[in-house]
Image (tube, rainbow, N blue to C red; front, top):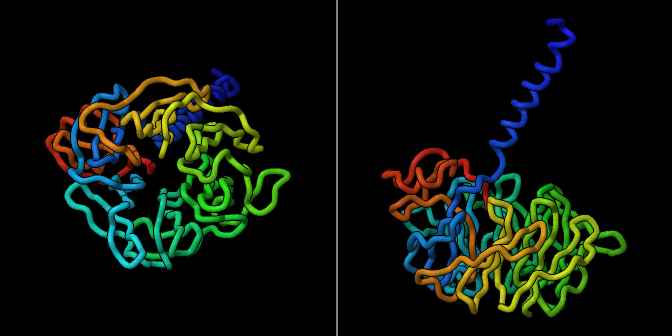
Amino acid sequence: MSAFNALPRKASRFFAGVALLLMAHIPNAFADLVVSGTRVLYYNETTGAFLGVLLPTGGYNAMATGPDGNLYLISVNAAGSGSIPILRYDGRSVETFVPAGSGGLGVPTDLKFGPDGNLYVADTSGGTNSILRFNGKTGEFMNVFASGGGMDYPSRIAFAPNGDLYAGNSRTNSDVLRYHAGTGLPYPAPGYGGAIFIQGVPDSSISALAVAPNGTVFANTTIFAISRYDGMTGAFLGELPSTDLSVNMAVGPDGNLYIIHRMDNAVHRYSSTSGEFLDRIGGGPLQSPRSLTFACVSQHGLLKLKRCNNAEQNRNSTDSIEGSALLPPF
């Protein structure tokens, strides 16, 4: 074989290797759906089957899974002098990760881990009216990542695939704001000022927010509506079919959209590309659901700190907590 003819084969091996490397960093579709209601429950993300109780007490207004595989929680029941801490559940116990008042933290409403592995928290009343950033490993306050540009009590936040941060207002308007990845500077849609990406989502506040892998932005308000917007221009694309009060949503590792329907005591799954309703996940003792995330859970109801590359194998393992966490954050 000539050197010329060998080049395509070498190139194909090279690109195949690159493809495998990229696939290793794609969020895996084998993770359990974790839902907080009066208790924290978990379900098979693929079949929707109820699997068990993760925590006997719930009432968490927001949850996120960190790069370490642990659950990070905001409790609506936390007491204190007008400030609420960020909690961490490591599979054994719930402890404080970010103390109340750290960095000016008042009443947090949402939290997400960013592309840099750090924790971003939407802070509202009694606090800074901004997005605060904390060290993802230690919980130490780092800085005010995003503020201004029209921010008014951010209720929900979401990261786009390119790292840009979206925040939904909850007080005097229901605008969705956008901030540059890395810098936190306002990044408005064409024709708008400040950080405004979507102006005036119907009703008065954003109660749920998510960004699909293709960049489509989903914003839900306190009325029975789930709106879709173009991820580049912010143009309105229509509404998803909904007849229930949706209080939180997230894009799963399978790329679909999972939306809590509070009165139905269930999570409804939609295609994030077509908006088509797919199925309903519920059952077990799920009552008054508030928040959701995705995590690896063993058969003992403990977090598995290892990659979810085989859900059944991880679930049936006798190990409770082991290994280094490689689960992509949610």
